[in-house]
Image 1 (cartoon, rainbow, N blue to C red):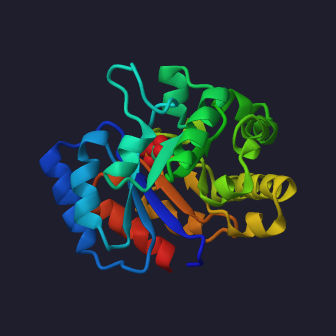
Image 2: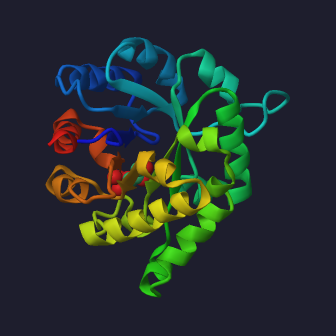
Length: 251
Ligand code: 13P
């Protein structure tokens, strides 16, 4: 484990309130206190889970935020609301938000800037669809995503951003990128951060892999030099699966 190491869960639209509470209690009892853990939870649980995890190694992330500061946007949640209830991070750029809610790089950039302005940290997701991977164009594709959003951040914003590489074809499919495929892309992304910001920034930025991370593949993935941890969907919903993934980052 190095200082970039993080294991993040993304619960997506799962778990009721009781289940959410039980899961966090179970995770707190695992005693992996040296690992940095972030849980991306539904908005409605943030307040209580932020209180429950206060002073522990677990930080709480929202899974979205609105790009405007406030106003007549019925049903939306602002960054200041999130900040005021103890949210640490917000996950932005997830491929499900891009696909089902039409979020593009320009909107993602607006959301990132709004989040940073409120003092929230960001987990920025990128990743290519299967057709791009099959054409061997994944590096250019992800580079373009980053150029249109992440690489436009200023230095301080970048310091408070974690990158998650999530190839779309590996999300929820049981199909994981091989550790070498993940390493190649993470190295590419770190190089882009280096070129845009500095070697120091590249050295300090956490780059997580997401897409069917399980206890069985976490060790191999996290052993790669530029894979600093995982952004875990399905396997973050059960302590008996997420626990071993946290253990894999400590080793
Ligand atoms: P799965 O781990 O279920 O493939 O989901 C990954 C993901 O989308 C995390 O954000």
